[in-house]
Image (cartoon, rainbow, N blue to C red):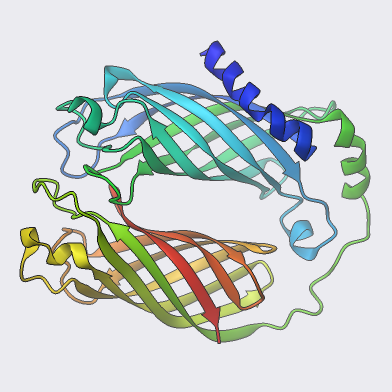
Length: 354
């Protein structure tokens, strides 16, 4: 484990030198795999690992920075050893948003890529019905209890969920979910600690007096690429899929919004020979909430199919997305349509508010 952690730290050196981060963090993780729906593998599979992060704490020059109590944006790199040789080891690379909710409670959100050293396509391990590719999506969310020492050292205990799957860019794609806890240590860099302390206590910051609450209609289109969902059929061709959304967004606050929409979802993989006769077009309705960190937005929502969806026994679906606001009313980003045990497909989204 020590050698792997040192390798992670070496990989981050160029970013540390060029990016002048405000904080560094290391953590030790431990957890277990949650059995997924329909899985014949119901064993208790523990994991143990480590991670390193470089972080940039935001000043209070804009209202959203002050509202979120000077959140941290950063780069995350880590690994987890998975017992029983189920899928090899999990390596991680992605972005992290660490937001103080209260003095001691932080929200930790990660999005990126997870790399598995022994996917199904390599060994055809009978127990591995989860991961079919080396490269998968990484989604992780955790709450952590944080204590700050006078020297600037932050010590925290975190607990949350980690998800990996490929969005049906490969098969099998049942995905893996982990319950994971960690012990983390974060400390400020010497070059920026003094400047951050001065900025933190500065009274020079933007307020929200110019913000006008609004309700605006919106449209979004999101193409995707996907394999057939039927793992039992040797259909490894790629098919086109998309989601078209129309709805409305309520903006009651600069850092929060909520909305509702109608989903029109099309998946040509459902019209393959394995599923001949299926229309491939499905309708749904969903609600969602959003949090905004300046130009960066995270969305989480839940929806229900308005017609029968034969490829999944659940009639509910989830959607999570990360977006960059290119203007005040336009954004681009990636969203993932989810069921309990896997990502249905990854949507590359363009959205405009009217």
